[in-house]
Length: 277
Image (cartoon, rainbow, N blue to C red):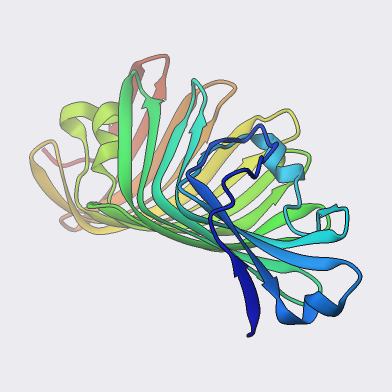
């Protein structure tokens, strides 16, 4: 559509504590807005560094007015986003955030050539990184995640769900690939490294307590140097007790065996039942 583009607004000051720095800003005025009392403006922020925190959940971004102008959408080009807490570090490099206003809501598309996630797990530091594509939109009291696809060298993640303005979160996740980066710190030489399918429910309440419940399966796997088949099980974790509990059944030849793994405070207990010698 026809529009007037104003490039390199060098003297433009963006007062937002989440935007630490940026290289330049350009503005776009759709042609139809020239004849309106309130002029619509689309902003493009190039190479910004953005600090992510829970305050972003309460921001609208679009629809902000100042004087005779109204910001219709804000786009981030080739940016960097950082979320940093003792429990979790998230770093997005070469990321683009594009917005697409609809009649009653705005669709956002966030992509990153390099999403890195770092977190402590069973006394060790785990790092996952890869390309990411996501799509989400704001609703009355929440952000709806309609798509989140993250591909790392060993595993891919697909997520959808909601993040609420009061801090609550309800997300469903599906993964496929090797979870060795998660299991190696937990099980050490007993780690299972083969291809697996899993689905999880991730929840966070108003007190910011997080819980994870999931199921997984493998067609074949190796454990303790021996091969087994048809592994199916469940996993539970919550951040208050920091306890990981895994229960699973699998085939050992013609018999069915059970395994239970409990990990807490760097102490790991593994129980096996009905396993052939």
